[in-house]
Image 1 (spheres, helix red, strand yellow):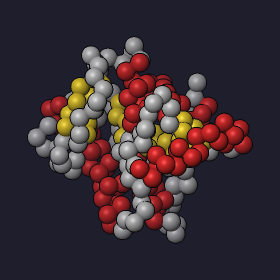
Image 2 (cartoon, rainbow, N blue to C red; image 1 turned 90 degrees about the vertical axis):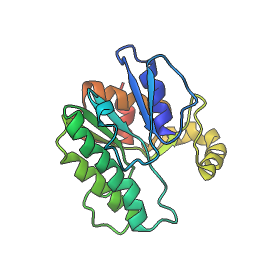
Image 3 (cartoon, rainbow, N blue to C red; image 1 turned 60 degrees about the vertical axis):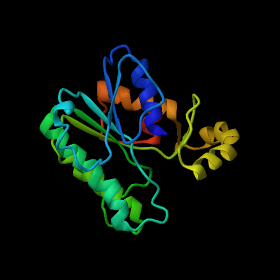
Length: 209
């Protein structure tokens, strides 16, 4: 869902000349500056490193809910996968900016009681040590889908159906609310122009204009 918001913003930006989408399934969207790299195994990049050169910015939006997952399984997707991708890109495009979707209440100490927050914090910390030009970790809270964007997770789709009418109210009473449109805009803007700090809360995301 977040990736759709980022892709929408990238394709609309005249200063962005080429977008490479990496995933396991083809996109429904087609665009002259959009290319796709389909991978059955997202943990092995040995045969496609040549396609990952000359990259200016990466938007790592892949993620799963920790519900029902063991810490080992959640770590594999949330820590090992982004760090593995980052290490390959450090070889092929070392000067890039890496934008990572984390989450509100992520635990940067890696010592708290909440499993997903510890693992996200571990991923954030490890990515900061890879050695890219810059790494920005985005920690949104509630994200309202806009512009026809739909979550792939059935339970999330139901939640958004029920809560969408309350979005204006949420937005007015808490800073922990943003939208796919604003998040996509903020991620691309920060990749292009930078930001004063490496970790952005929902309030920081909404402050990007």
